[in-house]
Image (cartoon, rainbow, N blue to C red; front, side):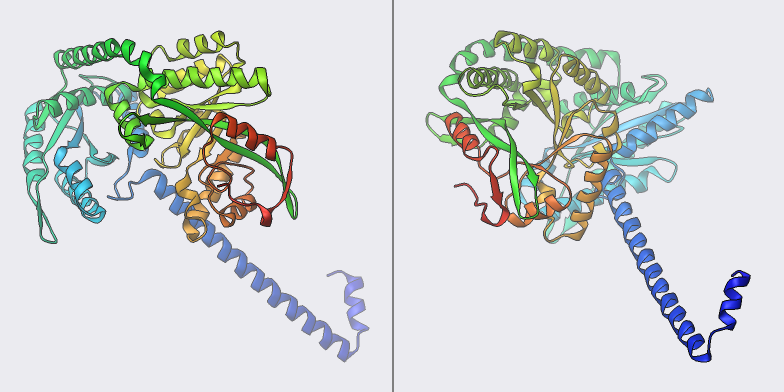
Length: 510
């Protein structure tokens, strides 16, 4: 307070001074209240961020760190050992549950299979001790980083104890459940010096142990050759079948197209700016009728027949895009799903380029969709393949984002253009504050990376309103439309393109 302000206070009457003091007291109380509200909001944000971080790095069924955390920890651990020239051996043990667990998962209540997983995690952690780390990397797979193993006899003793401990029955609510396991092991530095090589070799050893029904196997080059030879033989059989299968495929399979809408939002209306399409394969079996894609696509992926089936989808979508360009419009973009096995096929880039050349298409009009989980197992190879596709002019979309709680950590490194938020988040945002907060955090992260965003699975007006408030503008789901035939899609696009709608009057498509 300066001299002029002090002099001014001296001129005030007692009544005016009292009034001034009361006013200052009210302002002080208001500031205290506002500071309290700010502190509470900061506390809530910290809790939300903590919850989101846990979802990213922990498996929600066992509470153990997941493969995202494993990748980070192993990279740091190996870098530290190599930089300090510490070549003491260290084992990477992949533990896979046998078919009994899959049967339990299908036949019994989810709570029982989750309890079994939790108990297995506890047993592994107790047996491994504080100096070693246990990760829950996949639904039926765990990873133990076993440090300072000394000689291999100590490792063999540990693996035998591990096998005996995991064979002990799980007794729960009247059930007596026994689950066998197989382990694949690689050793640093004997079998590799980097994470990808070591885990790949552990996976080869695990594949051999699992097929041979062994309790554990250590990696050797001979085992690697056997596994690779078997894979090559299987692929040769599949390719021999492809030639005949591809000739018959048009008789049973066809594509539908689900609209993807981008809107401008006003106070009371929204305007449809653009409508793209996602191509979705359908199977009309000659005897069984329509087969759900969730039933036949995993089977095709498992057998390798997804390669010819996926190539048929690519060429059929390209042919449809060419037809629409010639007869309707040249500004439609079609998204095509590429499966994990198809993505890692070394012929993929050549196949897609051959397709665009055949139908004289701009690659930017064909968006390649990949699921988040298809990039997890081999991110280095995935990034290399994605860069090849982008250099060829194709747009890349990351589908089902959030289902693996894995990509937040490395999304910034993936060369993708679009992220599609999985419908599992949308279904819960109207009644779960936690999922609303998690989705809000993910949207902020995607926006900061300057990526395009599509929200899948929008089914209600209430969901749409919340998503619009969160800043979303591109949507896909039954609230707007089911998947349509080629003619239905064009009719739908003509009906809605550049039209304005009052939100309350928008009706779900039949």
